[in-house]
Image (cartoon, rainbow, N blue to C red; front, side):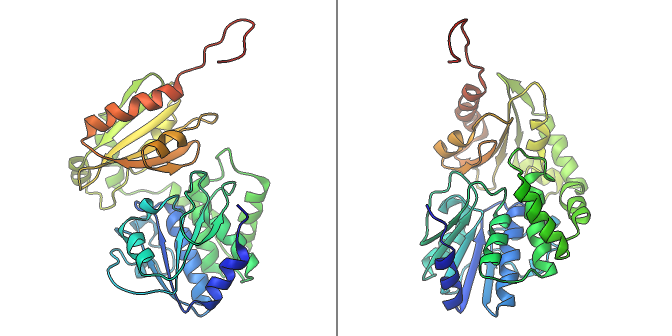
Length: 330
């Protein structure tokens, strides 16, 4: 589908009130794209509301206007809703559901290959490394100059989703965008330190509980985080605190997955894979989405039932192909 810059610009220009939402259990790209875009649109004189279920994780509170994000959306009407960094409607949670029901038009801005193309106007670029990269391109199209605070938010998403520019989808164009954001005042070293190299003691305690559950079977390494673990660690945000990234570094495994029990008794999956595999197909089949090597979904519990359902699917992907002499890989 052709990216609809003109239609998106027209929608923003004619809207007096705008709602921006992102996906549940938000990461740096979700929060960075939401606040970067919101701050830019406020600079253009727009009335902007930002919302995500549960609010902003504390690690991103340094971003401008993080304190204005609504954690529970229950009132309001908008001319335009913009969904950022969410591949499907369910990922936007209750805030997204309310927003779609009370907005005249919806822009879908996302970089996931599994995007379902919900909404009315599409700014979907699957080759972009982050949603914040797409927002940078959009601001160029408007055009709108980069302020320092907008650049900081956009760089936060770029750093988070590329793990400090170390993922396989980083291209020369990615580094060019980073250069432009630095020129606008985004301190790269400080952002990397804040979002990749700093964590509260509660995160380490959560790892302590999760690592006790680690299992390796058929090239898939897994761990479990229960609500009891979350409470014991004193972690406010429902997150694996980066545990899936640690598991994905295991050389004996091709796929890593963390099963996280939600307060409602469902199970949130964080899945990572080594380059060359495609776990997005499993995530989509389970009602989620994501990228080939980084995906997720939320499914029914309990934990053991979720493991019994998911692990065989991932193990099938991790299983090496059979090779016969004289034959192609099968």
